[in-house]
Image 1 (cartoon, rainbow, N blue to C red):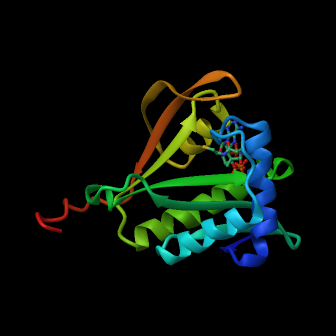
Image 2 (image 1 turned 90 degrees about the vertical axis):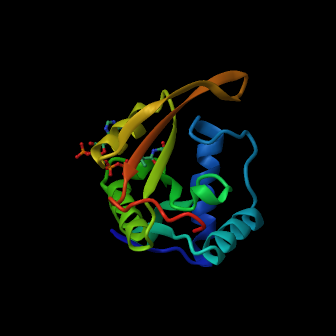
Length: 172
Ligand SMILES: CC(C)(COP(=O)(O)OP(=O)(O)OC[C@H]1O[C@@H](n2cnc3c(N)ncnc32)[C@H](O)[C@@H]1OP(=O)(O)O)[C@@H](O)C(=O)NCCC(=O)NCCS
């Protein structure tokens, strides 16, 4: 298994993993599947903004993807990123998620980001355990922060401080 930057050729596999999660999981808070063009636009935007999109590949097949991007748009959040990581259902618990996240965290450190945030649906205990395993700390739970398929969903935030840098100076 290798982890490498995504290319446009990976988009159908990335889309299939994403839309499976839309259909079957509460991890993505929409009931609307994406099109290939929408995923292509997402990849282009991420790369144009300097954010990574990584894939895990095993036996010539893309089995997972991970990325991070802005947390919130105001300038004061420029040192903070929010990530996502998704594995194909038959590839889970194989270490691919850990490999993707280790590469993603290294990338965020290299680029000078300070805080990386996981936003997790509260019943997704597997993801919470996974992030604990990676060194993330539980920040708290927002009750009924969103909804899907007629149910309120609670939202857990977990975080990993990436460095011990002082805050950027005034006017930064
Ligand atoms: C969550 C996810 C990304 C984890 O990736 P993964 O490749 O399955 O996990 P790994 O094999 O790298 O696991 C690393 C460690 O995390 C922990 N872990 C992972 N999944 C776990 C689970 N379901 N239950 C408990 N612990 C878990 C374990 O400590 C594991 O180490 P171990 O296997 O040696 O015990 C993956 O299962 C996934 O895509 N799930 C569905 C989508 C999703 O929930 N994405 C995250 C949205 S916030």
